[in-house]
Image 1 (cartoon, rainbow, N blue to C red):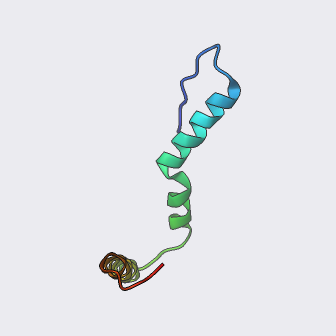
Image 2 (cartoon, rainbow, N blue to C red; image 1 turned 90 degrees about the horizontal axis):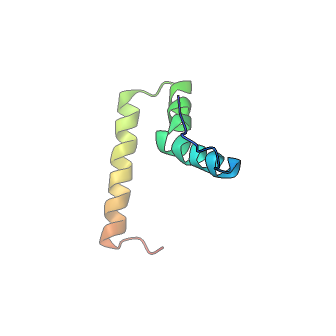
Image 3 (cartoon, helix red, strand yellow; image 1 turned 180 degrees about the vertical axis):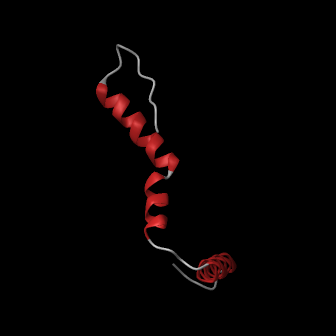
Length: 65
């Protein structure tokens, strides 16, 4: 549960902006999407390896973006 401390004189827009930022940092939506379907650990690992290979190739200059 997210709790936002707001002062009496604070604008509602500022409080909403604080809430949205805190909500993004908490990664609630990411966790919700991950829990909707089960992914096997081997599939997760394969994705991580492919991402690491891609990043390494980007760093070495093999891709021109």
